[in-house]
Length: 535
Image (cartoon, rainbow, N blue to C red):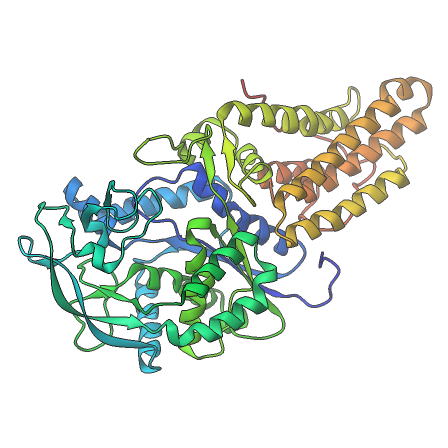
């Protein structure tokens, strides 16, 4: 691990899960997606070729239901949230190479091509089935359009999933009521297209076995649970008016199920950005020894990335590389409660960005986030952590070094050898932690280096050295200046805005992933506090 010194650049594709255009992004969403940005920034820093893609998931039943309630079109709803999401990601400094949407014409045309290939390969086939139909509304109704008594807990639930975790089966839906009119649905034959997952199970099992050591334990466990149960065929078409058209004769009245076209967005987004940049998309998506694929998502999306996406790629039968690394995060709870629309206890990322520095939000969500188990968020803890670790320790080290009273230039000093070794070792350890998907550990290593820097500063007592031994003073400030420069490198994947400000102060052009020293006798201009204490 730690590939900063490798000779050949790798092609790294990073996919961030596509947020659904039905509600504002809350901090739990960002906690589940920010890992992708950390990886993208790190791999760029060590010199790899990186494509980091995502987009807004625009289609499906919930958007049509919301549109009816608000007397708007589904397109208006989707476009409104897409713009909101895009702005939030930009303000959070997510470094997407392309953030697109499933309503994009390029995506729709490309995904239809992929769909037809799977159909022609025999992995998608037509089948009649009994489905819930509302006589009063004269339409087949989707799972989210019906309400029923949960067979598991007895509570009333929509047909997609109960709060108790039970997923209603097809036969459960046939005893449901239409949400729109309250009429009891009937069972009616409907012709749909299905993905033959069962025929792909052996290949998926081999794939999972070969890659799972790269995945977090939650991805391994959830995937193996589904494989043990056996993969059922899965409908890929629905009776909807809002979505991607089906490119198969006889199915013109249906649309693609949102899950199939959304996960294929990783392929279409890569194709689009490669066309724009005159790159070969196959160098990122087809099998070769010099590429790796990372998927960043929350734990509620695990099987879409570990089973469904690989199944679709296998069904294309065109030598696609299957994702190597699954970066699944757990849930971020608010004040020890699961974020819930019904409880209204979510904190939107827009609310946070309007009040707090984006680097502070990033630092907290990465360093205290739900990496391997559910974690808790409270504003009080967020403020306490940011003030203690960012303002008091990191910010203070920068200020006391670069704003030392009477200091106008970087001293002509000598670098402390022991501290140089510490910094060089930090690059190795932080790089290893990032590549092992241990982001909390990576931040802890850098935080320890900051603490060591403050301790060194206190022990050297430059305020005394300046009067008693100017050479020692110069060595201390020069050593701390080099530490600050390297901290800007190390913190770049986590806190990019403040890292760039530090590099600008020290006339360092780009973030690198190797030990650097600042230019001696360089004038230091305009050092302002990077972080304000949160009150």
